[in-house]
Image (tube, rainbow, N blue to C red; front, side):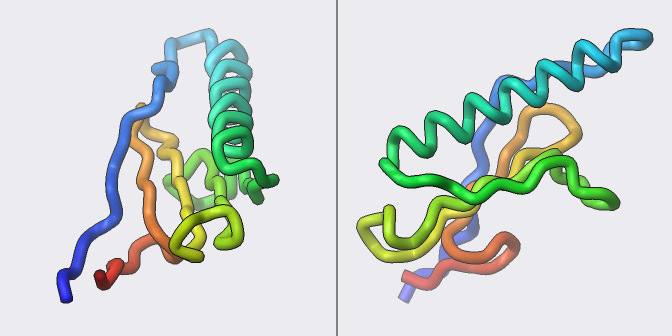
Length: 99
């Protein structure tokens, strides 16, 4: 059995500019909403979301239900507060997937 780490991807994410926090916040909100919409369209199922959780390095998290995937394992996408990286993992963020 092989052990694989979660995948990482980049999403378009605005950088914080001094004096323009409101613009960046609204842009991030819109981009996160676009990501959720795309995932719901691609998997033809409603995805659970969490946005801007306090005391976390994530801006938001999207969970694709296990029923929507071929292998029957949920997919979790965690979007960072610090730029464009996003973590994509099967079942549980921070865990390893055994194949």
